[in-house]
Image 1: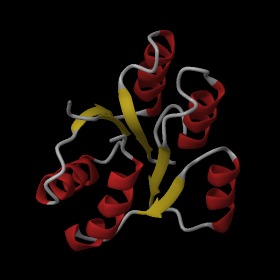
Image 2 (image 1 turned 30 degrees about the vertical axis):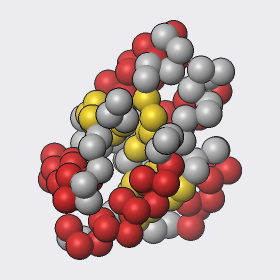
Image 3 (image 1 turned 90 degrees about the vertical axis):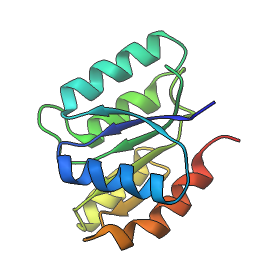
Image 4 (image 1 turned 180 degrees about the horizontal axis):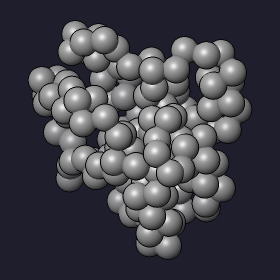
Length: 133
């Protein structure tokens, strides 16, 4: 079964790069893309009510319109049906306070978005280790 990943990302270019990086790495993934924080929260609420929604991994940008990544992380980690799903932050923020807040809030990893396609390879390798099976 192909793992389902919730990707909360408002930048279409970053969505495309991430999808391409997984594809190029030969990792079959189905993405459920939320383009803003409210949409991501709605998906997480639905998943929480339905046993986790089938998500194998949650990828969050910190700076989403509507509801931020830290709030989404807090919601996911507070839900009994979601708290065990790995949550990885993918952001352009290299501010130490953002990293500390994310990790203290239960994020399993914190990655800076690379500037190009090649920079995604080591991140994808780490993300694949987060997937079940």
